[in-house]
Image (cartoon, rainbow, N blue to C red; front, top):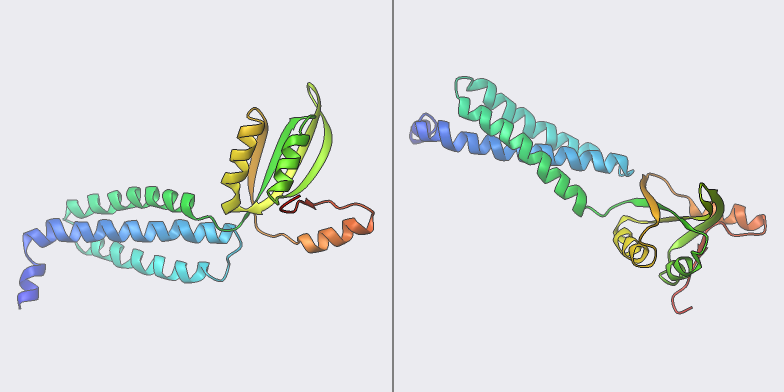
Length: 197
């Protein structure tokens, strides 16, 4: 009886319920963002579990909104939760340093200092000579853990601040096989530096 009185009271309907809907939407939209990130970065075993709870929360929230159609404040909570959840999801994506990326750098032909510095920090590198619109350039490829990216970009911006670079998520890497193939041909595609050299 007490619970029924609480659930039917105006303060619950127009304050508590919209806040719960708002929080539920933040949670399910954020989980959706994480699920998409995990799928894109190859974490296929975790993504279905996240998807299950994401949809379960969404169903509970959507049902409550549909049941209480005259409550316009619930619509505001629903839409506000979606918008806030999108923002929270973007922040989570920034903080989630999982998976691997490939960093491509195009810079002037005099990039030996950068190559040497990256090898010293133990980044795996592939260096190629190429022709740009204004002359010779070097293209440097490096596959690394996402959490290593900031340090690599700090190094690049310090040594070659005007270099052009791109970053791409990768879902699969089989460096061992690549090294074996390239070494048979008499060269190593990924030259890995060692600490202390």
